[in-house]
Image 1: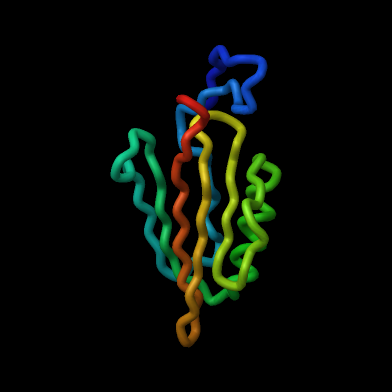
Image 2: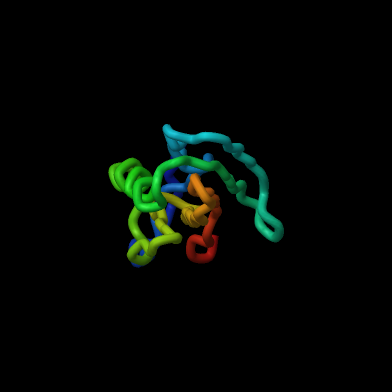
Length: 123
């Protein structure tokens, strides 16, 4: 949910204020997994961490998240690597970053996704 707040015309920060964490879709081919919500140490904004395992490759997992999140106004922060995907959402304050990392086991890919807030100007 977004609410509008006053903002300087010269500001490069969004004028909308976020009241919830942007939704992140669950990976459809999860073998085992869990999701934790909470407030990160030193911040007042909530974050979400998801960990799961899948038989899909890291590239397949990252393609899924890019395809799902780009229409929701998430952008790549850096080109993805074989084991790292970083995206951000600058639609409203606070901004949110998504960090996804993978590690391969014998038959599965272990995935850790952290969605955390980022400061938005002086707010």
